[in-house]
Amino acid sequence: MNPRPVRPGGSLPQNLLALGSLSLAVGLAVWQQRALGRHRSTPVTAVERPATTFSDVAGLIEAKEELAEIVTFLRDPDRFLRMGARMPRGVLLAGPPGTGKTLLARAVAGEAGVPFFAMSASQFVEVYVGVGAKRVRDLFAAARREAPAIVFIDEIDAIGRRRGDSQSHQEYEQTLNQILVELDGFHPRQAVVVIAATNRSDILDPALLRPGRFDRRVELTLPDRVERLAILQVHAQDKPLAPGVDLDRLAARTAGLAGADLENAMNEAALLALRRGDEVITQADLEEAVDRVIAGPSRRSRALSPRERETIAVHEAGHALVAHQLAGADAPRRVTILGRGLMGGATVLAPEEDRRLWTRSQFLDRLAVLLGGYAAEEFRFGEVTTGSSGDLSQASALAQAMVTSYGMGRSLRGRAFEPTGPLSDAMSRAIDDEVAALVGEALELAGRTIGNAAHLLDALVAALLAEETLDEARLAAILGPRPARPAMN
Ligand code: ATP
Image 1 (cartoon, protein in one colour):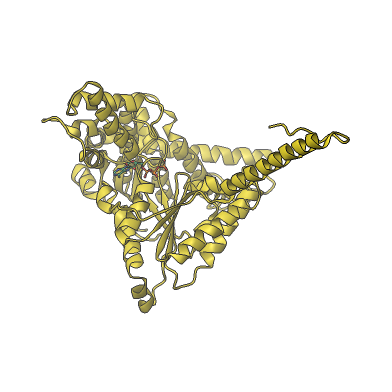
Image 2 (tube, helix red, strand yellow):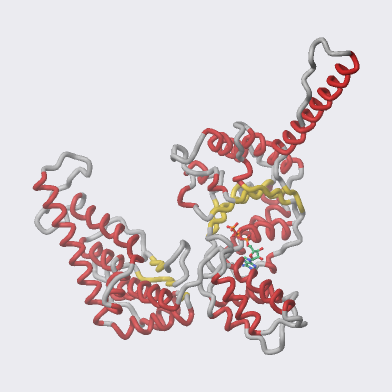
């Protein structure tokens, strides 16, 4: 719209006409600004009372157990108050994309029967400084009015990055500060629980995680085979499946996929059946749907190839076996080939007691456990993959500390070195040599331990490939009793 200029000296009707179109133009501009302004300052908040319950969430048993207390609290906050218990404030749901964080938060609201105020952190922030902070204020004010209530902040890492990171800027900081102010400002009687979701908890500002803020953390992992079957079953409930359809077969070949991808696959299978003009979903539809999801661009996770699965199983079995066999190491408690991060599995060790003092041989055993995955890959495949990089940097750091802080080198005994202090070239070289010797010694120990118990490595790998996660009891059944612990701990 181009308002015609009001030409001085023009005839009256002409001027009137011009004025008319000018005011129309101004009117339009004002309207537009208001509309845009409304768009800008209206929080993209959705408030609802979800009908979702824990029965809609398959698997994730531990997470549900942890959140059950929040449900109890929201149902009857006064009971907590009478007990003098500290109210839960903030819960951080951390886990890979598509593992059901939003679903779980909605289920908490559904179970408790309270309103659910949802917002995505990336929507808090726009180009106009101050908009994010205002949105946070509005959101919390609305939730307080409706308390008990849940505020759900998705993608908290979008604004909750460590302050001072190159990516953070003023607007992010203001928004983050406002969230902290709101969390700190809860009146003890206000039953508003804030649930934040992230798949990058490693980059969150530590200020968010302090007591009284997001001090409860619930970890969600990729679903294991049993959980994948349960998720497929949940999403098959409203779909007509042909007789004899075997969902467990799909669960078996979808290691590495998240719940969202499995839901997507079930939906895709229904569409395929429709396209065929069929009334029921067949096994072939399901198989093809899974193929499409695995190959498609919209997946949130990545299915592991058989070779990757085997490599991860060998790697984790290596950690677990070395941890089990070496008396100075902590015993393995849980091993899984489904990782938290992008790739890889995890081996969780059980510290038997809070140790304060470590001997050199205990540290050496610990180093060997760290290098157990690397050693197992080398033992089984004759070469290693990139999967050990995290282990290697931890092992190097430990070996470095043994030499520079604890006097546990072979030749540099009885001395400590300031990591930042001035060191002569010769001394730096001596330290490097000592660190290399320690790592070499530990790697040799790990390799020998694995070589001497190759049958146990094979048994662990087979069990991991079949079951994906092995708990303490399964590990004990496969590995047998641990060697006796040394006298001094
Ligand atoms: P993102 O990090 O990408 O936001 P998210 O962890 O919040 O993902 P959701 O959005 O909750 O994941 O999951 C998407 C969908 O996947 C859910 O609506 C649900 O249909 C399905 N889903 C995921 N996990 C489960 C589960 N454990 N049980 C049943 N369905 C699930």
